[in-house]
Image (cartoon, rainbow, N blue to C red; front, top):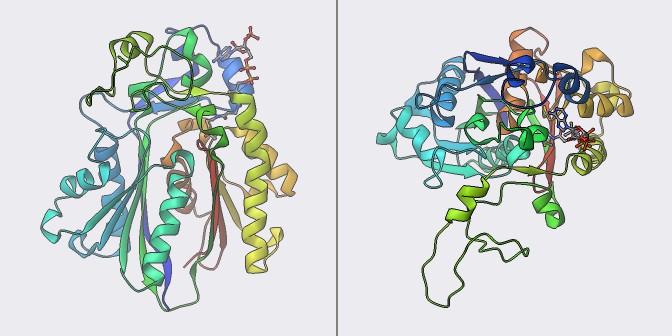
Length: 350
Ligand code: ACO
């Protein structure tokens, strides 16, 4: 049975930098509040009408493909994770295929909707496809354009200050050596689905609560994903920040330990932990409760904010480019987010 290794990786962040101070033009907030609660200093925003998750994902993917030493025509399968897709449907997978100009090969393209855990879920799916012998070269992309869908008024400040735009990509390749992905672990608990969510626009019709979304109640078929009332109210993400924090710090540790137990490895064996960049305070809490040193954990949320599905591949690539990840190292990736969903993986770096 082949193993799967990360053969190439790349990332792209837009050039527009927005500092915490810049955000004070739009809402009642401060650099001090944001840094103290989240660790974020600045984030990048894509250029509207020019950049999208697909174009950013393609930029990251081109680098990953080149570094893997293959041509784009050799990619066997695409997996795209995002919560901020270009379109409601079709998903970004096929748009990426077109953007990369590889439609002639007619490879499959899968879209992953697991928000902050999207990259880990995608990695696990890719790993199974490679281990089963179905594919040899899988392109996995995580990309987000949050800036297009956040409430930049004071009412939305608890959410909007946290997120940023960007993309990361890896090229997963089959290998006969004892290297690459050692294990992956995926979990969810839908009890908390609305605690970190963007429920509008959608086909719920208001079934899960008593709010008036302006849906006309009729037995006739036909309706709309978006009502005038939703547009007037603003369709923005909602987050129970304190609950997310409490759950995240428990589940991050649990799922990392699960991976260590499965592989018979110890916390001290981890050369680099890259947690999903949700919030620097969450990462610091996880680091402390696991007793990991500063050298064992990589964070870059200070520069980019929380880029959801893109945060792990961006951080992974940055850490690798900085020489912090080398052949033979044990790399742990872990995520927690909307759903709630969470997951982890351990990788023996090739
Ligand atoms: N600037 C200034 N004040 C703010 C801001 C802001 N951007 N946002 C909220 N406030 C105010 C609130 O209005 C509130 O004011 P009040 O006391 O007058 O009512 C006060 O700050 C405290 O609000 P809380 O929501 O209780 O703030 P908290 O200390 O919980 O911090 C935060 C909010 C940072 C979101 C925190 O709950 C947290 O870190 N949660 C984890 C969630 C997270 O990191 N999510 C990331 C995305 S999800 C993921 O990737 C897993």
